[in-house]
Image (cartoon, rainbow, N blue to C red; front, side, top):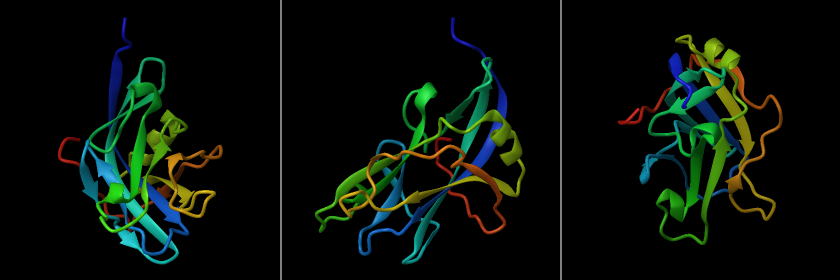
Length: 160
């Protein structure tokens, strides 16, 4: 029997890609094919913001829902696409990085439910080969942090 979900809410997520590869387009994936541009970008970092729905399962774990989330309920993630995967035709790069949501706790979700808060994670924008980050990003413990988002603009998926 499937565990019943408890009522949750909507939270903001921000992914900060530090030290991105110059000249390589990065986009966040929404749904199967939609690409969402960064909310801000500089030579030092590229930021993506989105909102996701969260429900608490009976076992106390969060289940993330919406157009930006991918994967099975027990292993949800976000995609950051690079090069061809981000709609850039004239590049040798064709990559996609999975940003896991599994380390986010319900306590963090409850803290982030406020209007002026979001969960933020910072990832290195380069893979070991010097190209854009790809594959499943290994996040250190405590990588997701609750932060004020007074300057965070949120992308909302049409199917959230």
